[in-house]
Length: 213
Image (cartoon, rainbow, N blue to C red; front, side, top):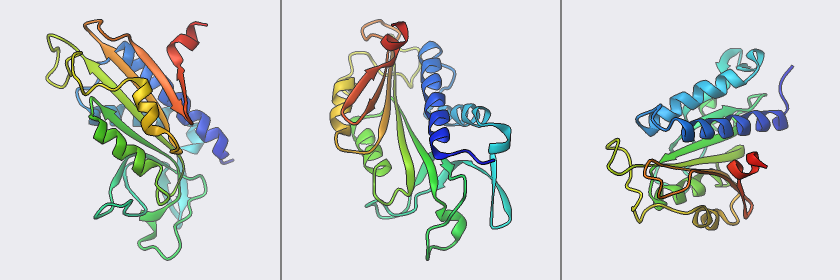
């Protein structure tokens, strides 16, 4: 029996939430953002019921979770791009008049990541995930900061960096866009409070504070 879209949404969101909380507890599990992609892929794969991890399209078995799956359209760019992690719809259907058909399957969810990325990167992710040609039912962005001073890693940002956005600034960028953003910040120096927020439809929920209620 295939999962309903609402059931997939619950699994994806809960996996994102627990993944972000794990990052805030152990921020150095992965050296780079690409490592986060791989680790999240594993977490999401394991979160799906075993019988729901694969589906059949054109008499071919395929995994419903895909890394670097191509965008269905140009999304106002010169060429097609690729999603960090994508979940193929339960009943794979290709867009009409598009070839090769395996490259244009409907997606249940898209998850884009950013680790210590500038405002422009987040704005681009918001635009692409919420684009009318994204060909997905749900779009998510995971926007994380890992800060330290003195630096524990060359990949870390200084807690004094002017590039760090607050959850309010992120919410303002997402206004009027059909996208859900998980905003997480960890700072070894203690200058910034450890925080995880879910931002959606002009709402910003502090998930750590909510868990303490």
